[in-house]
Image (cartoon, rainbow, N blue to C red):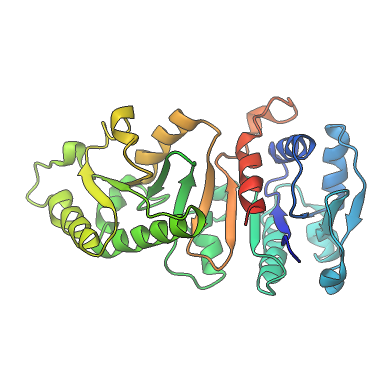
Length: 321
């Protein structure tokens, strides 16, 4: 198949996902067939709610490769055919339902029928139950991937947290030269493959102004040596820079990626600058995995006012692969 299908796991059923998906489909034409992995009952209820009219094409997993797919209809793998009656009776916001959707997607990805996965917003605290820091680590574990990175990608400026969903008191112990090297290589490889050039990477310091009143300063002892070594090896990496000024326009315009030490250090600024115009890409996997860069947003459910830009950007990114 010339344009491999995009597998879509909607995630939480009580979220804005179907609203923004329907908006994206209405406003855009995608070359890659979209395959939804969800319950037909959930899909039909959401289509009725948002007055989205389109015929549904049921896809059987056994005959997956025999299907001639396009986006004239909604391609659906009906999860109801592959789960127990107990789960089927209580699909709304259950971990088992979401897990089964992912399991089917993983099974398909391992056959190489598709190399593209998109998932909708997930309530990580409920679904992951503290077993994984985030979805990046959860999905990576299913393919035995140890080296991964969460890239919040925008064509002009992207960010990557060195540590993801960790409590702040654990961040300093997690930072290492090895981890900085791993993330840098993954970021560099992604840009070479998808943009055709080596990115300029700015590294933020851990401490305010990259200074510390303690005897051990991570910025001097860990970050500086790691950056020097990577530069000697040909990577365009610079810093460490003070996190309170690196996002000023005169500074950020010099770089393609800002590698931060922890989640909110770089995600708060990028969401302020780009709002919904960014996507979450998992680096290091043997396939493409993206998701819109926002959560379920339950406050906006049924209002039909949600912004679909991040989801549309996510689908378009996969559509180009």
